[in-house]
Length: 249
Image (cartoon, rainbow, N blue to C red; front, top):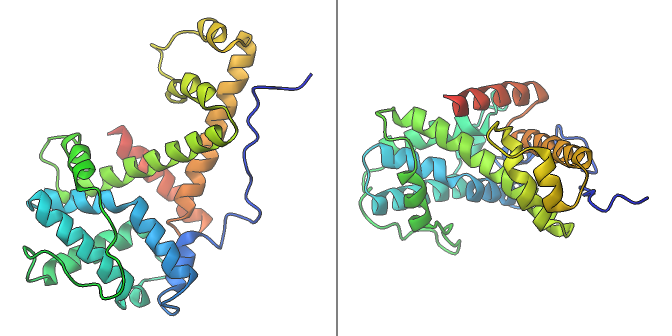
């Protein structure tokens, strides 16, 4: 009997390492056009909010933080910065934070709206969404560096969640995703499998299998997403442990 509730997820055609997006980005330091630059643009689009939150925590207004974040990303995309990236210590998160701190220290005209970029379009930021997300950040007196770590971790988890949702939607299982996704977190307050089984017309044991599949795929996507920002499997393990520590605090 066919399993109508099974979601056939796509599988990568090649090993996770060594050709991650970050390894491609590092090559952009010597190859300023092409695949490396495109990979860097994607990483910037996915992870601009932690940069924005760091700048806001440093005391900048929303408007100035948007300008500084855009200016930094342009500096990253168009300057020689990648050529100085350390290939042996390749966490994209650490690289970005260090580069942003240097950029802030050297930037003189921070309050002026950025109008540079030549023929390259400035990466579009959703400033209103950025402020909504920043308002949800913890209000305790943490350092900008700790704020960056938190924002980075949650931005990564949000990216993984979005990828998982997209996979279910492409498979025509959006409704199943909405019913199952609360169970990713293993919250004890959620209804038991019997009640959920009636909602999605499965047996309780079938519900357990579906949730197991979703959790397993979430874990695969989480590791894949982390792999895009580090240089080796060992770093991926360490980065995963670090991010889990950050989100549990």
